Each structure stands twice: as structure tokens, then as C-alpha cells.
Length: 319
Image 1 (tube, one colour):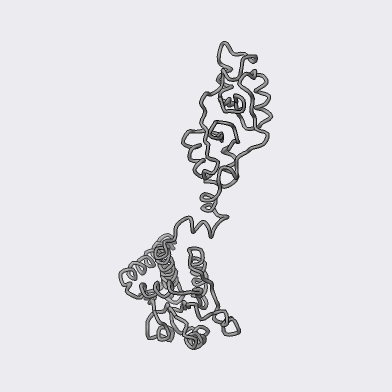
Image 2: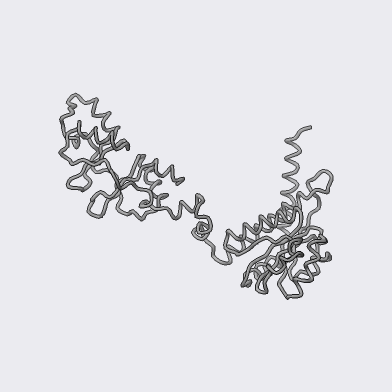
């Protein structure tokens, strides 16, 4: 068996189903978006089996993109959890056949309370289709399963339609990456948008010497600081930076002397910033652009306030 060919056929078949459905989309998408947007409560998604698994993912996508949503299993709804559906909610029910017994049993109760119902089923003639205020058809010509029975193309299409609805809602409500990060404060995007320089910079035990300090004393401070550099100051104001690279280059000079002032071997006018509220991700861009190991943070008068080392950014997961 050529499994590469088999996998390619599955991907192409499912891709074709998605493309065909993209061409057939109609006003039901507009109607569904309008219903969800008008919902004062939550969008409750329900389904059984594979449809339930897709619905659970769909609810998570909606919830993380600004539409309050959760998944409710129809069986649990029949045994008491139906009370979780409020009069201000909207239900999105998924069943490819439109006849899943557990799901169809709760539909009369949903409609009894006049709760808006968006259905996802193969056509309007199914039980789910008849109960739905808006039906989004899950129309496929063939499952990718060689037996034609395991939900494959149909679940892929359902999930894609859920993604499409979620994206439509993001556009409708002007959902931005800052909003997304608010729902994902622990993720990489949250760190990129919320962590600032002041949250990561080192402010204690900084390796600082005055500009008239001999090189031999400065090397001791560099070793104790464990940052690979020393800040050279003039009464607390940044004057220069002596890095381990500067030190190695100094060793090659014929007039090198440990008794000379460290300032004579240091980098004058080093890169520094005065905005400690700058995003750490932006600081990383500066560090990478200038090929630095660290950034010095000062006030407007160049008085040293802290150091942001590239290792601090990496350890914090800033990318």
C-alpha cells in the first residue's frame, strides 16, 4: 500500500468538499451571524458523538474570540442541564444526519422557550432542519473514509464552518489581537502584548562603576555581575558600557594596561532606552536589530534605572 497516496487522496477529497461548500454558501451565514450578534446571553453549542467533539472545539474557539460560549451535551441536557439554557441564549445544534436521537429529544424543549436555534445538518428536511430558525447545510458528496461511513469530510466541513462563523463574529465586533491576548494572558501572544520592560529588567545589584575606575577593578565587578558587561557611569548617569567583547579586543592592544581607566576601552554612547513601559517584545526587536546582549534603561537624564538582558527575555518566553 502507498500510504502517501492514500493520505493525499484524503486531503484532496476533503479540500474539494470545503471548496465546493465555499461556493454554495448563502444568506444562512448572514442570518446566523445576526442571531449570534443579537444574543444577550451565551451561545450554547450542542451535538452528539463526533459532532459533539467538533462542537466542543467550536465553543472553545468562540469563547476565545469574544463570543461567550460553552458546550452542552444533549444527554446531560435531558437529565437536568437543560436549565443551563437561558431565555437570552442562542443554541447552535450539530448533527450531520439531523436525526441524532439524543439531540432531537431536546429540540422541542428549546423551541418551547422560544430560544433561537441555529442548526448544522445535511438538509432542511431533517428533524434538526425543521426545528432550526437558521440552517447551515453540511453538504458533502463523499466521506473520506473508504467505507463511506466514518465521519471525516463531514466533520472537517463542520469544523471549518464553525471557524468561519467565529471569524465572522470577530470581524462583526472588531475583535483585535489585544482582545485575543486578554483571553490568553499566559500564551505567547499575551506575553507579547502585555509584558513590559519594567516587568523583566534587573534593577538590583547592577554592575556599575564610575568612569575613573581602573580596568582591574572593573573586571571584578563584571565577574560578580554575571551579565558579561559593566555599566560605566558619571555620577549615576550612563557614560559607556564595557562588555566582555570590549575586554577581549583591549587585550590585543600593545598599550593594554589593567591600571588604565576602564572607560578608555569601553563602548561610548551605548544603546539605551528611556521608556520602561515599552513592550518587552519591542525591546527584543531592538536587541536583535542591533545585535546586542542587553539594553540599558535610563531616565530622561540618562540616570541608570536597570538592565534588560536577552536571557531574561528568552526565559520569560518573549518571542
